[in-house]
Image (cartoon, rainbow, N blue to C red):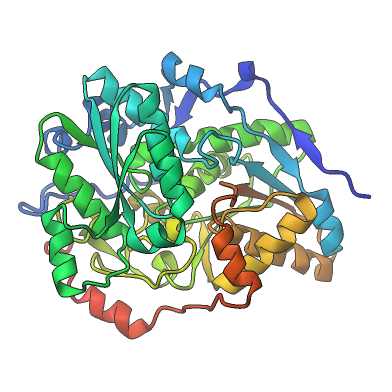
Length: 454
């Protein structure tokens, strides 16, 4: 029988710095703009939402930023995370490819999200903030921030997208176990939520709507700040511990990837895995394909427009240059709630425009197929989100079987699916259907892009 191989680093080998891709790029990404003036936003514009420690990271041009000791001590609860070679999956596929996966499901929240939740809570606590607001889709980010806030004696208030709130009740339970206060979004608690419900009382919600609600509450109080689980530069920065560890672990295995593939919604998991490998590509040390995989139902990179748009539905955030489906886009309620965001990280969007990565979209039935195949060979039930990357990795391995190529494929299993079993129930019962987002709905949403258009 094929034996699973695990590559472990000890605590002393955990990264001491986060990696910032921006200074290594051939040209800098476009800046966020103030929606009123059309001018680049400055630190004072972001101060009502974020602590200065995070704002400085958001605009940093330093290549490496030291991880505070207090954060590293908490990271040590689960980091370094393991890298596995999926030998049983390889055997089942009868492929000459070598498939590796970096497993982030070992964290207390069961996903990669605490990698940024912990430092975000830390930097807020240092500045005396005692309450954070946020949004969450599938619930992984909300769980992670509730966990992080509990460690720093902070209150955490979470708006969870209604579709996921209804589909994943135990995600809400887990957030509440960690002390989080959870509201379904859209809610009657905010002006943004009330407006959406007035127009559509049965709205399934979206991450854009939930962001509007959380931002509205944070911006209305001097002692409350907002925390975001994806999209922004500082969030992706914190996640680079994934890729940095993976490089060291692959060196232990004596291999480097030909393909790095990750699921992508807002971009934190993908950026965390991919950015260190893009650095190595740019330095001439590697020549690997960097591939992002998104849902057919929310095809931001593959079918969205690269332009300035709001990060939220109500238009309360700065304008971000990103691939977008329109800030009032409301996707179908697919089970990968963490991939249902209307926009893409500005930094990932910029990297994509520079031609440093590729992107593809896949239907959710194919992704659940891959998740079940993975579970039955590797013994881990993946969250619905990383099954998109697994589907792509499996397709790549099957191509290798046909061509005889011995490619090395690396993916990130960014979380387990123990709290997503209702989705698997529907899949096993044949009740999961595919949504391919209609072009006319995309075109309609893009007619309402904000000014200025730069």
